[in-house]
Image (cartoon, rainbow, N blue to C red; front, top):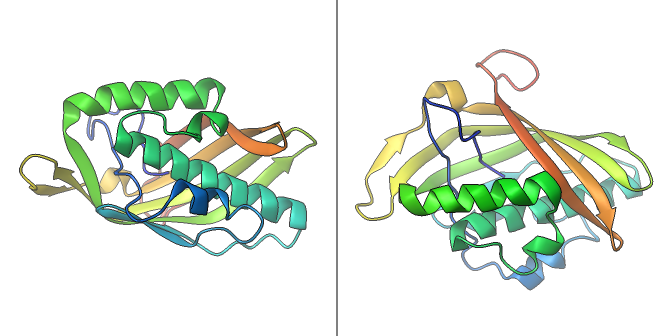
Length: 194
């Protein structure tokens, strides 16, 4: 979500997100049955989701749940702790990733500003209890902002476009992110180049 670069990425370091400003956890959770949230102000960042394209109701429900999970991941990075009910919607490697990310975030002192777009969101597989969602993340309008000084710096162009993969499992009737990975994609290169 948004949004994240592997900790080992030497050129850019850690990308951090601020939490949702003016969006309650209840409204995030309440979006699961419909198309979900299209855009969320993640102060000072706006997380924008392209409209859902899946016609199948089961896939639409899965994608709405995925959006909720991504937003809760972002809320957790802003609050610098796994927010309730975030732990219910993150498990395994995804939860460990967010916990490690938060631990590193405390030392970085940055947030992100601008607009982050999730687009070309696809359900690439869906079984009874597991699923894989892929998306493209356009961070070309995102900047790093120092919490203490407000100074803003542009992200390197090499990380403007990301291919993301989310593994989900069904837990207590809710789709939950279990693994998360992203790869920077050079501009103009498939699958997420523009």
